[in-house]
Length: 237
Ligand SMILES: [Zn+2]
Image (tube, rainbow, N blue to C red):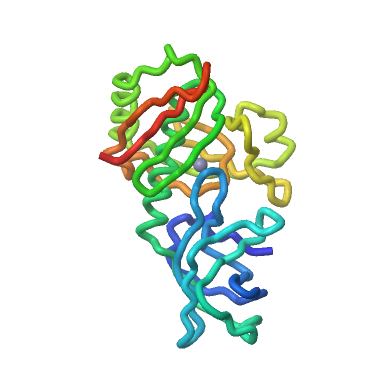
């Protein structure tokens, strides 16, 4: 089990941890700031440092349970590091791009009242697939709405609800294919806007603190992926 520090503070760029397990090409820690690939958001890269030894983390993935985090590293791992303290650092530029893009996907979702059938978050562009009546998608109108949401600088914050509360509020799950992780009977809810709620949904990803941080977002191509399925691409200008 790994304590997921990014759930409380997605802006942590470095921390201390203890190595709990090593494999041929992976390290596990008692706590981490590395986000593991999930829900369309890629895993983090960075470094695990033990004195002179620096292990480059090339990707971060989930293990067998939602809070088992596997840090994939380059090169041979000294098996004797288990139990030792280390310093951990993420590639902040990359993560911040993912946070901006991930939050952008929530903004996009708030504009389209439809089930999400797929999503992929990148550093500069992302896509979200919707099961939607295509006549409801007006790129120009949506771009104006996006500009307005960014200009209003709405707060973005998380809260935890119980697994039962989540099951009683099915509107909080917007994905048709994937369910957000329920860890220790708790589900993370992401809300954009306080007095006026722009978007609210269950999500285990990392997000920026306010919509003003995603300046320059626009809708790219809208692709036809089947009778009702539309792929909406977003990017930074
Ligand atoms: Zn999210």
